Amino acid sequence: MPHAAASTTLLPGFAGTTLPDWLAARLRDGLGGVCIFGPNIEDAAQLRRLTDQIRDANPRAIVAIDEEGGDVTRLHYATGSPYPGNAVLGRLDDTAVTARVAATVAAELRATGCTLDFAPSVDVNSNPLNPVIGVRSFGADEQLVARHGAAWVTGLQDAGVAACAKHFPGHGDVDADSHIALPVLDVDRETLLRRELVPFAAAIDAGVASIMTSHIMLPQIDAEHPATMSSAVLEGLLRGDLGFEGLIVSDALDMAGASGEIGIPEAAVRSLAAGVDLLCIGTANTDEQLGQIEQAIADAVEAGRLTASRVDQAAQRVRDFAARASVGDAGSASALIDDAAVEEAGRAISVQVDADALDAARTPAAVLRLDAPANIAVGTAPWGPFSLDDPWRGAPVTRMDLAADDPAGVAQRVDAEAPAGTVIVVGKGNHRHATAIAVIDALRATGRSVLTVDMGWPSDDRAYADVATFGASRLLGTALVRELFGDVAVPAS
Image (cartoon, rainbow, N blue to C red; front, side, top):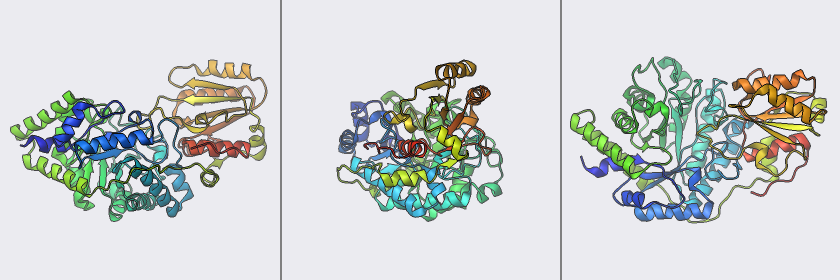
């Protein structure tokens, strides 16, 4: 098996903001492409220089990025996203708006030299306890997700950037995060076809260029392999039932759901054998690691566990995809947070308290920020009003680490420091964290006014979401501040 065939199927990440020599050498030898992450980016001009370096080494290299247009952002990792995010777009339910946002994302990506966007997420978020999808989904109804997923694909690709619908066959009805575990979706084929697969079928009808797999188990489809490594899922459901002929991309193989038990090289072998074409390796890979993966592929072919023809087929799909990719001219395209965008995002905010309670919160005594462990997909990008300058009108802000701080102690401290007036509590997915529930209950038990804000996907009963924004991007932070305090200066983008 030619060395180049295995190399062409690999899509690594790397550390730093300039192209490492080892990665440039691999690109010259035929490496399939590179995935860009937030820490690789300083600003748009630097990113364009970086992508130009990548293409100087390999003019046909795929330059991929996770820019979902909301909480998951790479272009705006340092400042917070200026886009509304999928859940907000689903609540607005205007496919023209969704297509326009996707086209704006595409303009930014083309200006910076990216050719493949790992978006949209077309997972149906049917489980409100889902720790990793939530506001990354357009909604809990498969038909709504289908029409907005198709609109996003069309908007992005008509503007010149390839889309990637994810996470096949659907990551929405699980209660674990595949970055740190192996979730299970225990449903039958008929349920998948009726629910999870509907948005993927719509994306395929819209001409989506690629589809990303998920690291989840579907025991009623394949009891032995996660979806990324299951031919029953990829060749059966995706290629067979849905008729997809484009590029199949794995979710990152450094995630625990893929390689936690078997290691990345073996995960790569199994994924290729199952039908994956392009292997997304991870966030900060090394020359040695890629060599180990290539050796594992060669050994698997030698042992008869993987055919050379399957590797060649995958490599040819990557080359064909890259040949069709369009690289934009260097430029300064950017998304602006303007009054119209803030007003539009504000229409998706849901308020469950009466006017008096909201009025009382307009002069808060204190703000409590609830920080859960960072979701690996989102990372540490600034979120909500905390990405803005002094959004709380001078009210003191207490930061609570939901993984470490004592709820009773935090509640007592906030109550003592601000003995009168409303406490605004802001978190993401408050109902999913026992410590968030405990600190809110403790503050309420003092008898004082407490206004809870959920910038994630709230629970159906909304017990810990007096105000729900359905997203925590910088744009949503601005819209929330305007909802609470009236007129607010739109931040410079």
